[in-house]
Length: 267
Ligand SMILES: Nc1ncnc2c1ncn2[C@@H]1O[C@H](COP(=O)(O)OP(=O)(O)O)[C@@H](O)[C@H]1O
Ligand SMILES: CC(=O)N[C@@H](CCC(=O)OP(=O)(O)O)C(=O)O
Image (tube, rainbow, N blue to C red):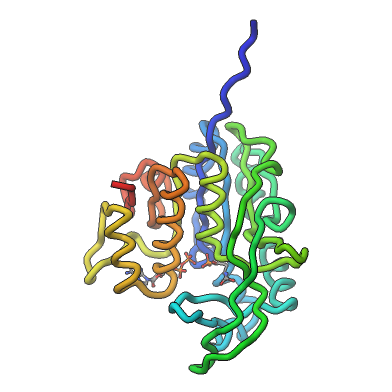
């Protein structure tokens, strides 16, 4: 009797928009080496590429805050189009780099059946005022891994984390939290959040290891901006069964082995 092999869970790597343009050749060699052993799901951000597309994405009004202090991009249909434009360009580059190194890579929009979103917030802090506005951003309500049909060593997916809401609209989501939801839904043991800082800093000191509980405490009391989103994503990933979340910057071989960066675990 022939046995069906148990599918290998993927490694999920979130590529921060802050650093994507600067990732040098060695980075891709390391990632491809890992990709020959394990299926890869890469989830990318776009904060810096959008700023490079237009100066309006550097204006303070481009980013809103909800009543709890969480940041979110002010997203209109035009912004969704710009996200798709920069993501298509990023996709060509990332897929090219992986394919040169022998990894068959495919690009997916989260909104094409992978990520669903719920009703978004209506009240937002914009230009220091709390205003009611329609923001095309939704909280992630589910991930259907069915479009990830080829989770095999030697293959990678690059996911653009847009989502689809119940009304069928395409909405923006937070890329770190989307990566966490995808890691949970695919049974990934590791979620790697690659960014432009080597560690989480607490009181100016780099943190090597931290529990989910301590990370959540820092998130609620002292974390700001992009790191606040990452800590929120890390907590959600661990709640969904991921064993460890690593936040840091290249070299990626060390990040993937948790030899560098900040490692967050349940206990
Ligand atoms: N406590 C902290 N430790 C480290 N980085 C922090 C902290 N608080 C805020 N940050 C900021 O978070 C940024 C990373 O988040 P973000 O800009 O969203 O990156 P990415 O585009 O990679 O997701 C860092 O560049 C740093 O400026
Ligand atoms: C809702 C919301 O704000 N979404 C984020 C998603 C991209 C992202 O998170 O990009 P980084 O990885 O570069 O931070 C945004 O549009 O900026």
